[in-house]
Image (cartoon, rainbow, N blue to C red; front, side, top):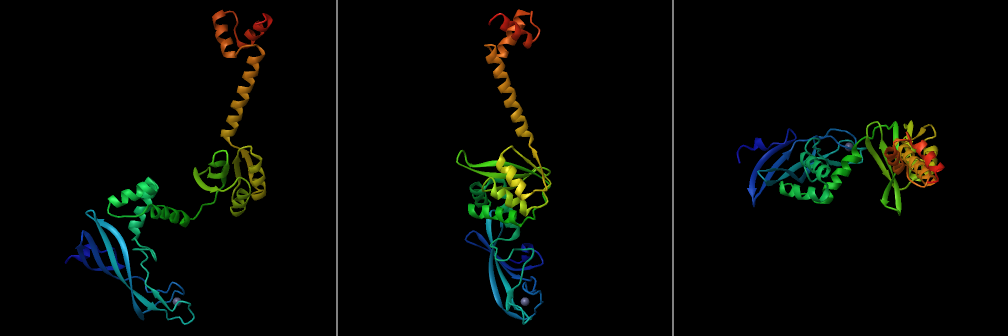
Length: 283
Ligand SMILES: [Zn+2]
């Protein structure tokens, strides 16, 4: 193929040939990456040998593309460096030791984020970029681990059921950014440890579980603890239900039935009056 420049991935890679073999494109290229030692940062112009890498790249009209790269292995000029030789780096094209170009790795991650492991595997195969479900999930985890966690100021803590009724963990949410921060294995010790490692927490919103109160007190004594809205409303609902059921039992009927009866009778204006009247009449 003559117009190899159209296959170029960028200034780091110079494409030499591209040919279709057994329904797959084989692209041979020469690396022109950095000749800087990753150990000490020294620049080298003394080539030691060649290093070959095979990278999966974006498909062409549904056909898979394999990039066969020849990279230089260079001698480090720094005698005190622990690396005697190093392979040139392709900062834009691919991560060190990766088996895919960065643009394919990004697609694998996005597919995993959107579809999950197994569906992502099937879709990637259909698109001409096969990747196993474990690879899809691994890309997701790697990306999540590489993100620099932002400081959490307002933290929501609640329990998380690993197995309902048997084993519970803790889910931590950044309430300002409305994002999941972490999922912990248990409900007390891990929470305290996590808070010790993230000292920026100022407000902790939690339920009334004593374990979380102790964990928060141990891990972040400076933080202000507040009851979260969900549990406050839940407690309010339970109180109202409890109160209403007590009133109903006392008068021998539910207030709802009493309300209907009051409307039918037309002589009692509110529930309290009707209840008093019913009690006086011995109902
Ligand atoms: Zn070096």
